[in-house]
Length: 110
Image (spheres, rainbow, N blue to C red):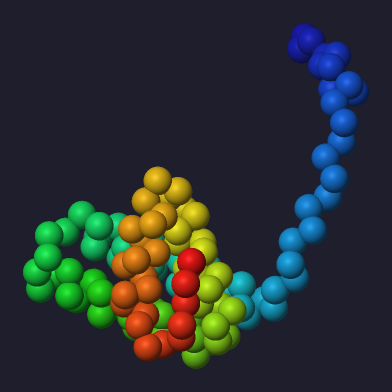
């Protein structure tokens, strides 16, 4: 027999989170871009400079172009934020990698 929780009633209930309502298409676009970019950025972080890194950066740029095409600057900024937030200890480096690859797309700054 499990012992019932006796302190659950003492904790104050958490207020509901008010998340900004995003359009379903933008949310799907952000999720798809973030999934792809996490692996690409991780590869750039671990590779020495060379042809492979250039290819990864070109793929990062294409993903940025796709994000802009699917929802404009809001989607691109959401993607940038989520990729940087995925690894707080590497957020600065990831932000630099993405902004360098996305130069000229839209003026984005983390």
